[in-house]
Structures are given as C-alpha cells and as structure tokens.
Length: 505
Image (cartoon, rainbow, N blue to C red; front, side):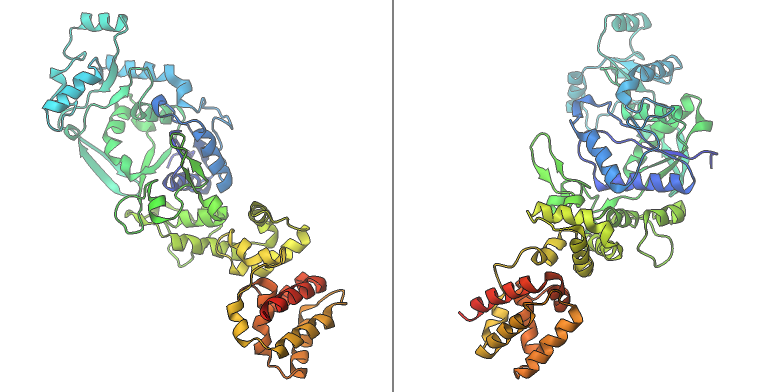
C-alpha cells in the first residue's frame, strides 16, 4: 500500500445521485478514514451536453446529510485543484497531444454522419485496429494535410491507438488477476471536438496529478480498464498508478440486473438519497430522507450491501464502520437490494437513538403535517414513549400526533358493539375523579382506574380498550396510562366526554 491513502469519488453532474453512487462514496470514505487517509470529491463535468443545473449542489447536499465530508473538493479547496474538470480543460489537451506525438494516439476527422453511414453498412462497426486504416484520420491522411486541417480549425477528436492482440492485465483488490485482449477494445475518443476530454483521458490524468492511491468504482467500469491501463503505461506513470477495486453491483430485489434509477417507481421504494426532480420532465422522485430514513440507518444499510465484518453484527455506527472496514470482506457477487431490510436498519437506529438526537427530525415530520409542536421537554417525552414503535421517521406522525391534536375520528367498531350504559357511567365517573388533579402520575392513575372499575362491577379488560380509543382514536399507541399522564387531566377529561357522546349514539 502506498504511504498516503488518497481516494476520490468523481460524479458527473448529469442527474440525481443514485444509491449505487452513494455506496461507492461510502466505501471510498471508509477505506480512506480506516487508513487515516484523504477523501477527495472531484466533479467530472466534461460532458456539457448532459450537464443538469442543480446536480452538483445535490451531490454536496447528499454527502452532507450522510455525514461524509470531503477533505478536498471544489468547495473545500485543496492543494490539487481545480476540482472541476471543466476548469482543467487546457491540461487535458496538452496530455492528449503528448500521446499523439508519441504515436499512441491520433487525430480523427470523421464526421458523425460519416460514422453513422459506416454503422448502417457494417454490422457491429467499431473504430479499431481493423477499421482505422479505412477512415479519415492522421494515420491515413498525409502529415501535411493533417497539419493544414488542424490549422484551418477542422473539427476533430483524438483517439487512443489500441494495439493489436496484446494482453493487458492488472490485479484487482477484490477480484484478483484480470486480463483483457486489446483487440477486443475499440479506439476510444480521448479528447472531443469541443476540446473537452472524455472520461478515459480525464480520469487518468486527474488521478495522476491528484496523487490518487486507490480507486473504488463499480464493476460496470471493468471493460474500460484496458484503455486506462494503457494510458498509465503510455504516459510513463505505471509506478504511480493507483490500485483498483471494482465493487459488486447493487441488484434489483429479484436479483435480475443492476438496480436502476427507474426501479424506484417500479418497485415502490426510493433510489435517491434526497428528493430529486428531473429537470426535463419536472417529475419528482422521493428520496430516503423524505421517506423517513435517519442518515445512520441509510449508511448502515448501504455498508452491508456487499460487505460485512465477518461476524453476526449488523448494526454499525460510522465510527464502527471506519474501524472495521476492510477490502477482504467486500463480496465479488452483486448484492440484492431489500427495502424491507433497509427499513429494519432504520427502525433499529430509531430505537437506539436518544430522544434528543431524534428531536429535530421528528419536529420536521410534525411541522410538515402542520402540527405545531409544544416545548421541547414535552416532545422529548413523547419521542421516548413511541420511538420503539417507529420504523420510519414519518411513523412518528401516526404514532404520536394524538399527543398534540385530539382525535376527531374513532375506531367505533372496536368499542360500540360492547358499549353499555354501565361503561358510560364508569367513564364519566373516572373523568370526574381526575378533573381537579394537577398531575396524573401513570401508576397512581392506573390504580385509581382499576379500583373504580371494580367498584362499578366492571372487568378492567372491558374498559381499557375503550379508554385507549377515546384518547388516541384507535387500537395503537404506547402504554395507555403513560398517555394519560402525558396529556394531563384537562385534556383526558375533554377526550373522554367527546368520545362518550359518539359511542352512545
């Protein structure tokens, strides 16, 4: 391993950040921090035709919510900037021209129309060692004519000259030894006609200049490896080449292919960390934040998609993940995304979180539902009472809204069939017994309730459910006398009287 661990994530601001990208960020970050290294965020905005306004801001917002702070980025600065590729344009041409002079790349003047006509005639047409000699490039056009075309400003690209029938190999940190035949790879464009680099050139140049030591990327990038390996070789940088790890895919729940951005709507779960609005269609895709996930639950779930520490432990804080993360425990096979399991992680993190930690999240949920929350002390007690029943943060509304707003609907089917004049008299007597009390302590109030039921000749089980329905509207909620204690005498009397009128109709 190199002396200094420096890893990077280099997203393109062409849309919302998918959870597969966030997992790649997370594995980069965990590896760097485990080795006391640095995590760099680099924006690969070379494809200006696909640039989406707001996408870069979205990436930073996602990282901020996840609790992942880059050591270097276009916002945080650093010694190896600029960290947007569009601001490094001149640098890439210099290196592309260097490859042309060395005979490892060439100018290609073919128009898009000319190439399309080739595709119409030749099945599976590729620009490679077999076809380049029949096309308009600096390998077939005389040198003087090439210079003249460039001087005139003729549109052109620079392509890598892939060797014929050469074995290209490297050792992947996850998958072991991998080998390719160069004849199976086409002559990729390195520099586009607008002077911007493609991913292939930019990623190698930037990784070299930024002294990146390790690269984690999805396995879908494996076919590009031969081009990148050759570029490191052709530039004479092989000794500085980072070690590569190609991560397993996140698969659809049925295991049938890679989880895509469109699968969220199809399967009914989020695939973006935060709400994403398509700039072209205006269509909104709900994120994990808005669905009700804690960052801790989201991060824990992502970490376990393709990794474990070799034990039965499933719940990890970020610090624990940093401490225990290792490449050896990353799986080669793809990991099925299981939304029910994702919710389980979140529910467990809600349970283990303090009420104080949950407070701002719950406030946001209730305020979104137009519930004005009272002072924090009251809300903290409510959170402590109901958090065990919540899987998503949004569940706090269903499980706790009755603490702030009296029900206007009741599950009458649970009460009316066995309602009687005796029960009505009992509840009115109970309301009368507590109405002047300044404080309703849970245990003492429960004793009073049971004594009064015995006095009226009623079984406690017959009146407990009606009391719960009176207070919350249905058959749910925490221990009923904890609810009584929290609501206070005035509110409990008010709700009993309201419900009695409904139940006797």
